[in-house]
Amino acid sequence: MIRACTVDELPPGESVRIPGPPAIAVFNADGELYAIDDTCTHQDASLADGWLEGCFVECPLHAALFDLRTGLPTCLPAKDPVRTYAVVVDEGVVYVRNAANEDAA
Image (cartoon, rainbow, N blue to C red; front, side):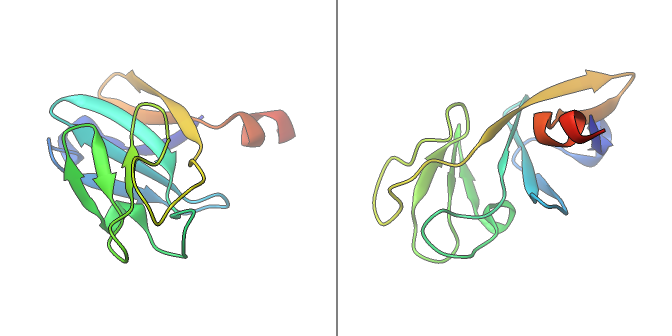
C-alpha cells in the first residue's frame, strides 16, 4: 500500500497527488475517499488539479468529467476510463492499494 496523507490533511472537497508511476490522485468527496489515476486519458493533465463536483472530477484542461467511483468518463473529450484504486484508512492515515506496486514487491 502507498501512504497518501493523514485524514486531517485531506478535508472534504480537496485532493492530494501521489507521485508515480503511476501518479495517483486521492479525493475527499463529502467524506468519502476515492483514488484514481491522476492523469486524464484525453490529454496529459493532473486530475488532482481539477474541480471536484460530488463524486466527479473535472479535468482542468478540457472539462472531461470522470466518475470517481468507476473511473469512467461521463462526457467528451475523454473516451477512456482512468484506473480506480481501493483506499484504506488505518489509524488516521490514508493509504492507496496499488496492486501493480504490491505485485512487484
